[in-house]
Image (cartoon, rainbow, N blue to C red):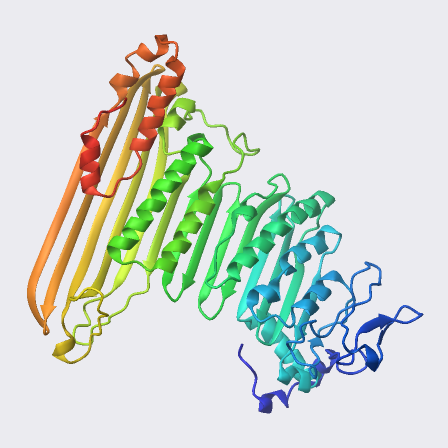
Length: 542
């Protein structure tokens, strides 16, 4: 956290003196427990009670009065945390218990849920912070005011949640922390909340806390599933923004028609966006999970082939799986026109089952060879799905679903397996291979109907991999080899689907669904040319 020099703090405007620390009459004595006197006010316990950190309950909400150091005593017996305001409420009690936590997870434990609970119980705004650095404890009100502002605006770690209701209200929640303090805030930015809105926010409390807990881990994890299960009858959109450490940022958005997630950090950036507007193409849960599993395997294969960063790949996989793991209930959305042409249940069963999406990883590039700066280590991967539905009527409709992936990567490797590569300016260190990867894959499924009868069920797929390996010995290029691999297949399923045999058989309905399910599985991307070629030799449908 950036700190203001003491010379600057000495010149703090007198207006800051209105932010009084709890180090005078409003401060508990260190080493003393909190107890209530006969009038119900908090008073320090006697010296004999110094081993206790009991907090007496009282006040309108019967919440615990704020203790000024944790039961573990980790902040030291002679330090008095400085509070923004003395508030005997549940949120302040949680913050008091978190003062001595050694890690971010401990400092933010329970605070996200507590903020949403506060609003669900009728609150509209809330602000609290606690400082526990030596500078804050020894400084005057002006110093503490600047430190408090820095904590709120420039905290090392922060997570914010913004929720927009269907009625137009917008409310913001934030939790932030660094080694010097913890701050929380609730701000009703616009509109007003109904009782139903507050209940919907209460239900979102656990999801917000789960998201915070995931981001507070080392390394940070994505746990956003719950934030996508909000009550759409009351809440219109959910946005989360987080900053973890010096370089990791996360931005998430979800509403009834789209979801998106992006992260940026030292390893690089990744983005996933899911388009939910075309609900007619969404498949069953099993169908969707099969497609997700297939894509996660493809992401792993791309990372292995292109030497992608493992941590960034894991975040990418989590983002893709979570944003596609569950979709809003399908059905008519008020205010949206009902399409005249739509995919039916048979069409959906042949498609991937996923909503349309775009996803990408862009790894931070490096130039590790001081004698050849044109050799760049990098990893860029994109994958997408788009679906279109055309036609003048339901009986004469057409559906086209296309999936694409592209991988461009480059990296250096030592000539001796297992020996770390240390490229320097001396030629003795210039013994390595430089790999350049350029892969592409596509899958296109076309379904067409003529007067209500299936006229087309055509699957076209292709995959290409090009690997270029340049070998250097003592700084001299000794070989430069490119290895291209390609495969393409076209499969026409219309004849098998129209043979009429399944409909007459006792188990005809099951066999029909089984064939549609096979088409769905076969239409998923296959980026490996060898595997695609082998797949083309198998029977169309069994």
